[in-house]
Image (cartoon, rainbow over all chains, first blue to last red; front, side, top):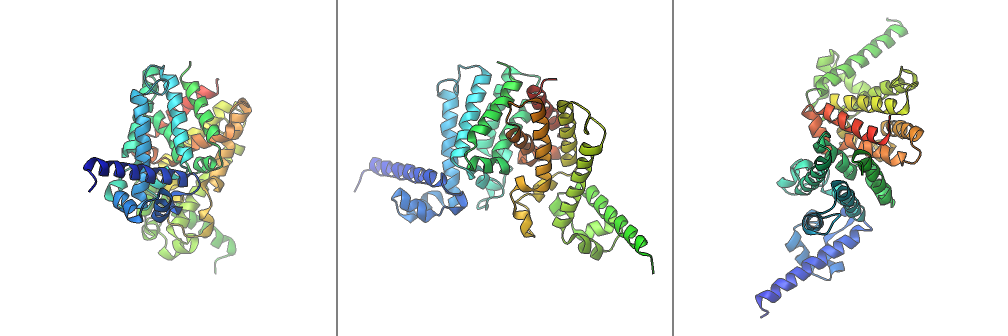
Length: 197
Length: 197
């Protein structure tokens, strides 16, 4: 029998392969068009493994989003500037918004599918979006950076205003047409207008 | 028998009473909590009149929204400045955003209920939000004003960014808690940062 460490390594490798396969499929399809079977085939694992590990397509998308949010969280807490500490608030905010737009653009529709309009499978998903851990973490980071430079602004509301763009149907449709750089540039214009360099 | 003009006047009066009653109920309830029966009772008309005229609760909400959008459209095309013509683009944009926030705040959830997450009763509602006549009219007005003052900005994307706030779940929840002035102030900060006075 394989040793426990070996089993854990296999499980971690399977998990990574499944998430990578999901990410690649999301570059071409809407989350609702992706089946667990397709993911399993693309990842080279059994369909049962995907179901056992993630429960449902919704659980799979959620795990992927959480993994990316974690990567971004690590980058802003312990990574190098300007995403990480050590750069001025404005430079950090611009870098963060670029990173967030890139994550959303790379996975068009994923955030929308994770919202309240997605088929709800478990009770915790019914919480308002502002209480979702990813939304809270992003909102907290943005409002903290805004507050560092301009205490006269409503940093809390401004963070909601900036994040609203990532849940806007017209903007998500524009991202599907490759307009991520347009959104990034416009958010930069908004931020540089509010936080002079 | 009453004359045709009399009948038309009655119909117009009924329609206005139904829309006014709906508006008053929306100040206290989510669109999905409002029944056609309640609206009929509040308006002092028969339930059949409401169904005959608006088809469904969705049709009723849609008619109300269209009526308000028309009022705003009239104000920006033929009304006095700063909402109407004659004021600088920045002043017109600020006045328009205040008016839009007021309309949305006064009818919390109505726009959300008109979005793709609302129960869809007729095919035309399935069009993307950016093709909805109200969204298009608001988007066109905002991008026109931005473009008048700053041709170097992506006026089209910026208009989507500003309008995204009106479909953001966290912001709509904040509006329900009476935070309309916070949203208005933050949108003013964004606009004045981009369009110097």
